Length: 199
Ligand SMILES: CC(C)(COP(=O)(O)OP(=O)(O)OC[C@H]1O[C@@H](n2cnc3c(N)ncnc32)[C@H](O)[C@@H]1OP(=O)(O)O)[C@@H](O)C(=O)NCCC(=O)NCCS
Image (cartoon, rainbow, N blue to C red; front, side):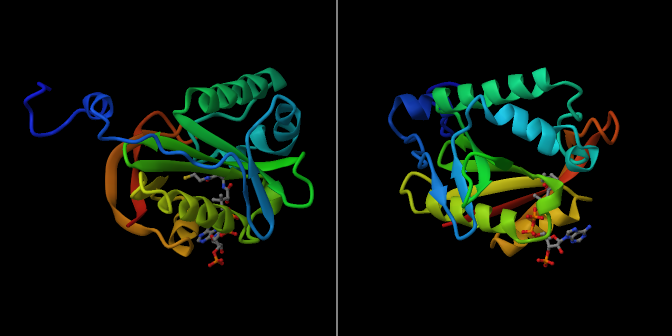
C-alpha cells in the first residue's frame, strides 16, 4: 500500500504516532482469580493440569502435548511474547494461590484493539471463572484511551466458549468462513464466530 493511500498500514500508522501501544497491566485481581505474567516454573504445572488433555485442546490450534519439553517451549514463547510487547499471555491462578496455574488468558495486541484467546483446566470448568477473567481483562483494556475494541473468535461448534463471551458482554458480529484450522478436528479450515466488545 502506498503512503498516499487513504487506508494507513499498521506500520505506517505506528511510525506516525497514530497508533499507541496498549499498556495492559502486568497483573489483575478478580474476586476469585489472579492474572499474572508467566514464568518458567509454570510449565510443569500446566503440563499436569491441561496441556496433555484432548478435551481441553479440542477447539484450540495446538495438539495435546506429548512431553513436558513442548510445554516448556510454549511457556518460553509466552515469556518472549511479554518481552516483545506484542502479546500479553496471562497465567490464571486461584486468588489464594498465585503460584499454581489453572489456565491462561492471552491478549494479542492489535492497533487500537486486543484479540483474546483462553483456556482453563477441565476440573475448573463451569464455575464462571473464565467469564470473570475475560470481564476483568476487557474492562481493564477498554478503560485505556488507546484500546477501543476487545475481540475474540471461537469455532462455531465451541458452544461453551461462545456462551462465555456472551456472558462477558461481547456481541456476535458475524461468522468467518474457512477461518481456522483446528488440528484436533481435521485439516480443513473451519468457520468461527467473531465476537467483540467496543466503546
Ligand atoms: C471455554 C472455557 C474457557 C469456558 O470456561 P469456564 O470457566 O468453564 O466458563 P464459564 O463457567 O464462565 O461459562 C461457561 C458457560 O458455557 C456453558 N456451556 C458449557 N458447555 C456448554 C455446551 N456444550 N453447550 C452450551 N453451553 C455450554 C455453561 O453452562 C456456562 O454457561 P451458563 O453460566 O449460562 O450456564 C473452558 O470450557 C475451556 O477451557 N475450554 C477448552 C478451551 C477452549 O475451548 N477455549 C476457547 C477457545 S475459543
